[in-house]
Length: 232
View 1 (spheres, one colour):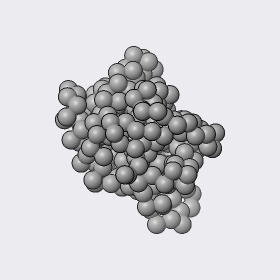
View 2 (tube, one colour; view 1 turned 30 degrees about the vertical axis):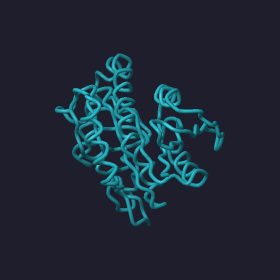
View 3 (tube, helix red, strand yellow; view 1 turned 120 degrees about the vertical axis):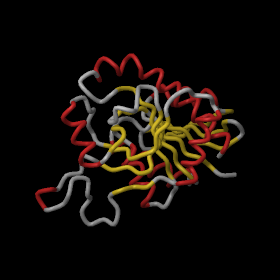
């Protein structure tokens, strides 16, 4: 049976998924707690990677090397970069870019990683189809969008930065892990998908919105993930 790896950025997500697991086995690797078991009769490994690209990349490589997962889904929350995408809505990444990769002084465009074949990391289309159907099946009354997720080791809270991310990359939402997970997954040829529930508008209201709506976004993410697991 296939093994699905689920990487969450926040403790709340992982706790809820762990509570759903049948007889979870704890394996400690790379300073992280990996929980292996079954959810809805499907084999899964669930882990909190922590915040930021380095944590996410290390977690992804460990999940591939130690558990030999067949696919990886990254869940979490993000800030909207599009006026049509509201708090609570879901964004699926068609691809992901590291927006804080910047070697413009050497003649590269922002986001381009020198001496590599890839700087844009494309999600697996089959996983994307499963995720879209999952949202319909779990009855979430939220908007669903597919587009580019931009990742960097920054919490985006200014309108100026938001506008730059849109103009430079065409991003739909901003977060801090997805592109690095995609980077490692693509190098290892493991299918991946980044799923994000919107928790704030990534502008000057972010400090106000985030504490209020993060819990709702996480709840939506868990409902969606349950349906994804059923279909995996």
